[in-house]
Image 1 (tube, rainbow, N blue to C red):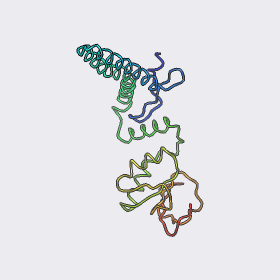
Image 2 (image 1 turned 90 degrees about the vertical axis):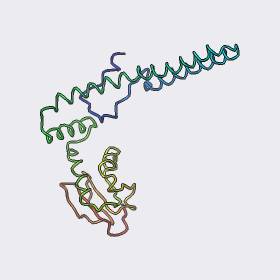
Image 3 (image 1 turned 135 degrees about the horizontal axis):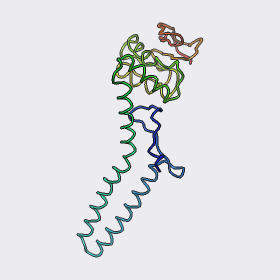
Image 4 (image 1 turned 30 degrees about the vertical axis):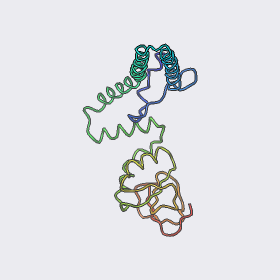
Length: 209
């Protein structure tokens, strides 16, 4: 049981993303909902019984009990979340309180890369996206590679609302490529280079990616 509360602090995730715990091979929330459903059904049975008996005072007590149960149960099932948030806060404070802004940024990038199992050449993905935002006219539609869920999530976050991400190069005005080995991009012309394997392309004809 204690292992359930031991989130590895060295695995750094975004503050809103905490990996789930498991009991008997199923995600913890499955058992939480099962327990809530059982209490809810029992409360309905008791309410029906007291209604048939005409005892409205006991029926109200059952309803109050169920509402109180939900609040208490919510707090108890959130203990793991609070503990992990506290560990992250203490760890970040100790590691970052006496360092410069550039050192903080470097440390945070290292944690994100490590926590998501990314290669080291992803270290400057934020700078690349900021570079793309500066070089591409606002309102443009862009397609991004790699087609990786993490990179797409970051791209939407950093490029919004100036640039609109699309799910196909056929819909795009511009194309950005981050650490992808591309020899030829049909329908697009390379216009800006950030560094090796990090480029911006502009549409010139009907793209055929």
